[in-house]
Length: 402
Image (tube, rainbow, N blue to C red):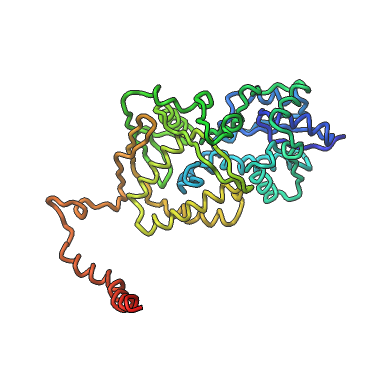
């Protein structure tokens, strides 16, 4: 009886080919394991495809709720944007998938797990490090990393073995999507000089096809988590999907940047992240109202570390838990409502309010009702500038003499 391997199966090019390749190369019984994080519209078809390709079993886990509550919203509270642009959609899904992959392998009595990541991508790191941290006794196989075939060679292999593929050589996009974002790779995307073609995008409308009037949306937060849209309470999945549709309709959410991968190379990355961009911008605006200057300054440092850590596949580490502890503490009073204006590819924060607002109108106004004691300013400035004056008197004179 052949040993079992649990394959993280997406139904895409590499994992579809991997089923046959694992059988031929290692004589393994392949259990196809798929995770629903909002990434496929038809998982029954994905499951049926895996069985037709030779998998001895095909399992689908619905993890959308866990993805939003345990990964997306914690990242939102951190304002996590890798290199200031990428909201970590794929990177956030991978540790959850790895966790469920390990649990399934242990349940099925498999001695190994497999994934369809290539040898130059980030996901191999995320899967391998996560699996090793959760179950070091499991062997990790990476067919796409081992066979070293080009995209065209992979497609040819599939054709020779009668494996149906969701892409063609004429339209060779590699897509990964979930509730938080959609990544588009391969083909013309690999040329950083070429503008991404419109046919690559399905969530974000071209600017010329967006509404001619702006749309105002009010997003309510409780302790850093979005809970209402225009006053209507919504659970996490529905809220993210709703904002995704609203923002995409107005042409908001395209990301096109040069990204530094974990393996040390630069790559041109194209994403669609409508909901992520709007919610992170709204969340930051609410924090500016409810956090002190020192909290905001330090949280910027924590957010950057958090984004790098998630991107680099280090979710299951003590360091991530430490950063999360500060982030959670910082969200105690991040409750309130933010009004955003969606129009022609831009999201602008045009209003914010909170019962915990640190903004005081009576201190900020220059009109009637001003309670700021301006007479105290001169003494404050005298003390604030004291170190600068002393240094200028002592060292400034020496500098001129020298």
